Image (tube, rainbow over all chains, first blue to last red; front, top):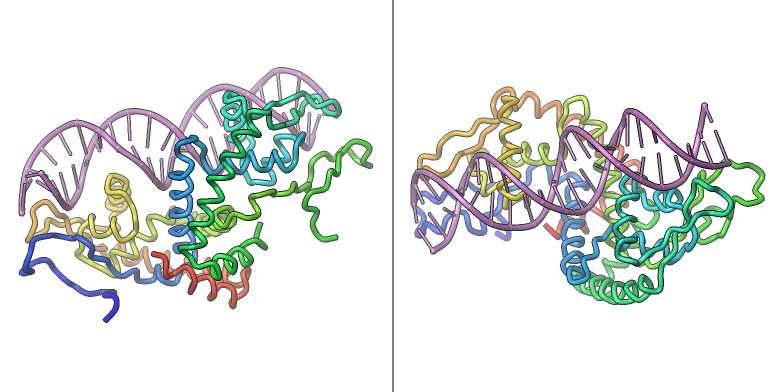
Length: 162
Length: 162
DNA sequence: TATTGTTATACTCTATAACTATA
DNA sequence: TATAGTTATAGAGTATAACAATA
């Protein structure tokens, strides 16, 4: 018996009253939903990221925006929002925070007065170097935990759904 | 050319001024992070779930709690929270909503006066039957979109991380 | 008319802390 | 002292709507 899925292992006449410690319940139909397992793993991955990047106070969404700006300097907020699936109102606040920290600059577009072109500042590039270093360690740990084979396999499977 | 990953396809002298429509930027280092793809897919899956269950106003977290109660009637909030990784303060509010809808009942525990045992009501069982029906359609569509082979593969890979 | 970026509101979810009543 | 459940607060993320400036 490896795992107890349904058991009514009541704490009634049990030896100790250590209560509900370590008891795991059955998942029922939840066992059949990919979304559930996807969510659980995603939360674990993000929590590790947030913890590892905690010292620099960088959240996953901020990190993703910095990487996109680095890879596509001079593009508009609209383009970045569309790429990452971040709603423009949310992106505005997110970018304000990055600008407050002097990591990015928003310059008026020459071709469209409504647009603002996004760039990393020198400070931003320096900060991002550190951030990427920590992020790589995070990813390496994740690959270790999942097994490098599964890590690659999952990446390849999921990448085609962006 | 299927997808443009990095291109500097500026809208300067382009034929139309249809702007940023359909332009996708490169992901840069983001391409190497499993968490990113995990998150994107999870969001898509949940959005489809929420849309399909929208008529019944059931969110994924509520659904998961109903299924756990169904599979483990009479258990405490603490046990359910631990199983699903839902913090107890959050679970309290979530259960209050389900109780308000008469889908669950919380009865005082005989063995521990602090505890409340959770059960589905008759209404709750009826509602859950409908909900499960919609949830199965959601899962079937997901399997279709991912391909049944990949769907199974992902389930098997992710299940072992709960 | 449509789009860019901004502000504002509301709701969900997560993370805490503090409190009560029991154990 | 530790646990079960509750209340409250703060922050992130998501979903809207409305607005000004520009296309």
